Amino acid sequence: MIKKIGVLTSGGDAPGMNAAVRAVVRTALSKGMEVYGIRRGYAGLITGDIFKMDERSVSDIIHRGGTVLYTARCPEFRTQEGVKKAKDKCDELGIEGLVVIGGDGSFRGAADLSAMGVLCIGLPGTIDNDIACTEYTIGFDTAMNTAMELVDKLRDTSQSHDRCSVVEVMGRGAGHIAVNTGIACGATDIITKEVPYDIDAIAKTMLEKQAKGKKNFVVIVAEGVGHSQEIATMIQEKTHIETRATILGHVQRGGNPTLRDRVEATRMGYYAVELLEQGIGNRVVGVKENKLVDYDIQEALSMTKPYDEKLHHIAEQIAF
Ligand code: ADP
Ligand code: F6P
Image 1 (tube, rainbow, N blue to C red):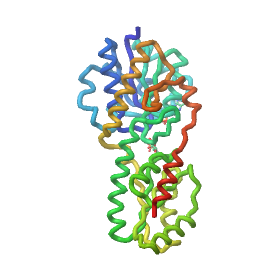
Image 2 (image 1 turned 120 degrees about the vertical axis):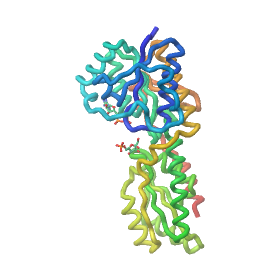
Image 3 (image 1 turned 120 degrees about the horizontal axis):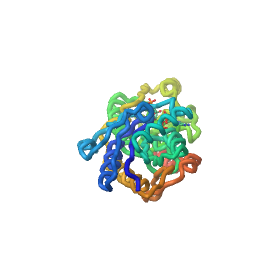
Image 4 (image 1 turned 180 degrees about the vertical axis):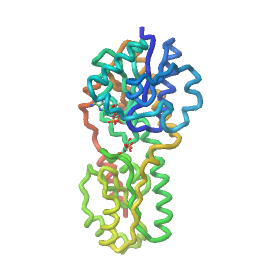
């Protein structure tokens, strides 16, 4: 029976990480385990920035964005020596199991630490929803809702000026935020890396729509495509419609988590501790058809995630 576990958040923060930390801590305590909070991801594990948590350590955090454990990117942990230091710290404190809340990079680190004998469970936490082994990642819903609200505001001013608004949303490697925000905001066009696009064709259809009475336009661009300002300039040059570019940026990573993120984070946190309780490690938790599942970390990392092209095409087909 595992007696002591640790919990850390790593990589980019995501709303709902606090709810996951809370669930891990309270579940472990309810099962009679000791729980240690590790600050700033793997960096804190290496330096020993670790503290014992009790039931009150996670009071008043379920509704807060960011992560009370802080997060970091830790280059040292990518080395054998770094992982060894972390393992030694776990041994020193008697930490046998670890819940790692983060993205693919964090899971690679968790696989390395698992190989050294610490039971690690990865929970998918990233606003981008770009983790292949799960249909859902903690933070995705909040980020999309934030992006949607901001695009709605931009639409008000675009409408008032008969303008086109080009809006870049987050998603370095995947267009999941872009396509969902685009459809929710009734965007004229959605530009992601997953679907080829042609600025001439976009400009041409914009002019056709304008000829039929449409006066303002919203184009959503995924961060991974980049060049939002250039795209806006080209649209303006080709259509003579006044166009502004806005990069929403990190505001999408903050804010109070939505109900969905709190619930998903809580059930995942609970599930992670159940796995550790059974002595199971080297796993990543995912959602499949709304049920929680878990995979070997390497297997999880080798999976690929489909992009919802159907949603993309629906958005385009009805944007006239
Ligand atoms: P995310 O977890 O959001 O994908 P990163 O890719 O920045 O974020 O990874 C977070 C941390 O995980 C890194 O700073 C590093 O400490 C650790 N990590 C990332 N990749 C590896 C790897 N290949 N091997 C070991 N640790 C890794
Ligand atoms: O967490 C995912 C993400 O928000 C990406 O969409 C974005 O490209 C990246 O993190 C930015 O990370 P940072 O500015 O923290 O390096």
